[in-house]
Length: 150
Length: 300
Image (tube, rainbow over all chains, first blue to last red; front, side):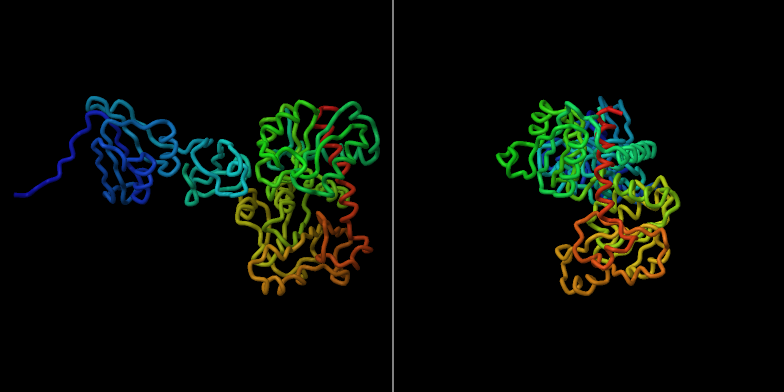
């Protein structure tokens, strides 16, 4: 008999779709999914006409807070987040790089004041396409591949 | 409330206004515009030229100065945060002038202070009044800022003065020659900056290739401690020393600038050449700082 894996529809929770395949496990870490006890479905390297290969995460009984949303927006700026309540999609969000990024990234410059004293980090997004940000304090430019999430 | 933290915050209009004011202060450096004003100079790391230049600027305008010239004599040595120090000093003075070894310290200070802050250098990041005096020196010697060829020589990687000057010159259609050994070449961030602002530049390793076409030769010190390979340092250290004979055939209007201290990158036989301008450049710092201080306090 042929067995199939059945992924049930979510009753309540969050679906994150259109995640670039190489970013999926970063998002798993951001959301601390390894410590969750509710059902989680993670798919990766799925065919995608837009991304080539994409990842999808379905999380039961859990929603994304604004800080988590900002982090996901930084590393997967075109991901789509659907909020499910009672089997219905009640909210759709497309992640977008914000203009300003507060308290989400560490500055890579060890001599930056934010790494020396208790100062909330603040970055200006200077290029949304290649996701370059500039530290508000030390003015260092940081490219996406060098991001260090808090 | 205004502060001067970074040259990247300065508009063309602001820069030109400060340079015009500096010219007025040069004509009349001793007046009493700062009479009754108290200025704090907080130098969390030692500096000779910058601190003396600021204190001269204030004193010549009739203001008074309090402060410290070494973090060891301030309460930061007891673990006080910068934020607390600035909030406390804000209670006492009309203006804070601060040098700090940590990058971004000046921005933070400007956000917590209840009085204006002038950045007198924050680590390798910014030193905007140095840029103002560099621009003033260029304008004074060339009669203009537009369409000049500037050759920057030496340590272009760590030298904050060259980075800030490059950014400030974006308004004036400059042509840059970046002359440095590979280890100390202009960082990618500033190369990108030139491309973004359509600033003409080229990168070369031999200073002799550019001397004949240069209007402003901006020398910096190649520091041994910047090299991981000392053999490499030995190979290049004399390549970036300017000798008087090298100036034969250079343009009549050429002027040589240097943020000082000079060590061996400009041979002493250049000092008597009328094209050497680095000591006058330092004097211009007083006028440029008088202009910045009076502008920030709204006194002119």
